[in-house]
Amino acid sequence: MSAEPYETPTIVRQQAGSSNVFGSTPKESFRAHVAGLPVEELVERFGSPLFVLSESAIREKVREFRMAFESRYPRVHLGWSYKTHYLAAVCQVMHQEGSWAEVVSGLEFRLARQLGVPADRIVINGPDKDEQTLRAAIAGGSRIHIDNQEEIARLEQLAREAGFGGGKRFPVAIRVNMQLDAQHWDRFGFNLESGRAHQVARRVHESDSLCLKGLHCHIGTYVDNVDMYRRAAARLVEFAVWIRKELGTGLDWWDMGGGFATRNTLHWAYQNADVTCPGLNRYAEAICGELRQLPLENGEELPELFFESGRALVDECQDAIVTVVSERRLGSGERALVLNAGVNLLSSTTWYRYEVAPARDPGATVLEQTTLLGNLCMQIDVLRREVPLPPLVRGDHLVIRNVGAYNLSQSTQFIHGRPAVVLVDGQGQPHVVREAEDVEAFRGQDRLPQHLLSDAGSDAVERFRE
Ligand SMILES: Cc1ncc(COP(=O)(O)O)c(C=O)c1O
Image 1 (cartoon, rainbow, N blue to C red):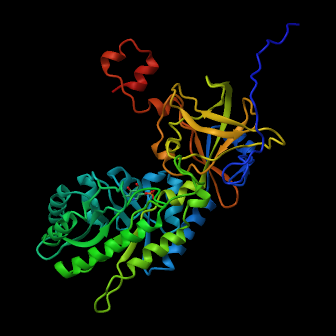
Image 2 (tube, rainbow, N blue to C red):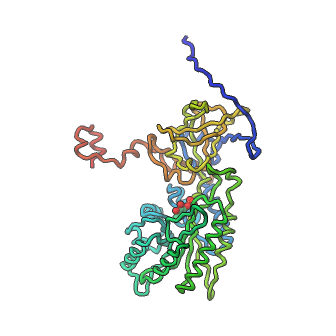
Image 3 (cartoon, rainbow, N blue to C red):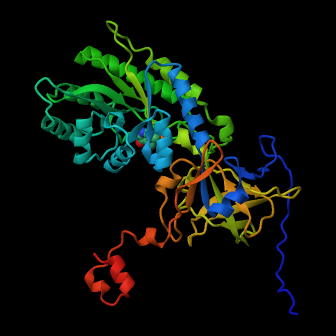
């Protein structure tokens, strides 16, 4: 019988239960269930890593959103921001809950149409709108929000080709940006302070085939300063009053974009997002209170009010289950765990200090500050630093919470295929809503030109023929 190989132990000074600046111990509790189902069972059935969506959580969020705004303003529409999470199942739940689609490309427009969203329930933003989409949008009566100067002339032409002109004008909105803090978003639409937005409003108003009927602004993303929304809304009212006075026209709709914060903590935040994230009611109060100040003439109604929230609706509705691959000590002596998912799946890790918890109860134990590394062959592949975690071994599962916004839509195939996504329905039944990617998903779009096929095997010839 051979002796077990000897491994030199690493001795680390432990500080169990010390409190942080907010008076709480740094322990992150364990999380044995995700969307109401045991983590072990989910992994056994669907593998790991795994993204798990809760259908009830999405529906509750949308209902909470609608309640907050619809109780404060007469005609509110929510346009689901497609790019935040493209999965058909997610979009479909949003549409079942009454959301329109907000899209920023031809691809997204077609994704929405494929799901059966009528063109006149699609809002189109984005700096690069293709002609095929614009034609379909004009024909179907979508809400087109003009982003740039060139778009005006292109749209005018397409509207004429669609039969507008000579008194019959297609209603559009212009996107405006404004300075609300030091780092304001100034690259989309036309600037208010410089007077550019005013010039463009006049230009569109004087068009023979377009008419100015809407205003759009999207002031940023993860904006947890409610007062910025209040000021943005006040500036839109001011601009609408100018449009009425100078151009003699009222608005049919305005759109306050997205950007509301969630209960994920930013890396540079001092306090936890549980404390700093304003609830939807606070945003609604700030925005609607200002917009309702718009002076109305002769029985006019307030313009329809659109939102295009992404992050705030889905971020907290999806968790990731990952598994420990190995434990190691970094040069500093700090403990690191390699997990079976990398930053290619969790791009928002550059913003967020994600909450991570082991799936099984560690019992009474000491915690150690731990760096969580991904499974990519790259030094930058760090999912989180300084997570107080109990001892964990290969095969243990961890739950990374609130990873619903943007991670999947921005994920890339890299080294490993993307994992499966499961949606747990309202009755607690899990459904695979996206299969894990295999070799076919990697190579499905590849083609080999003839001169590279000549010495490939017959399978390759069949698969990669141009
Ligand atoms: C025009 C527009 N609307 C809506 C959104 C959604 O923003 P968020 O996910 O922060 O709510 C974005 C994202 O940046 C956007 O560019």
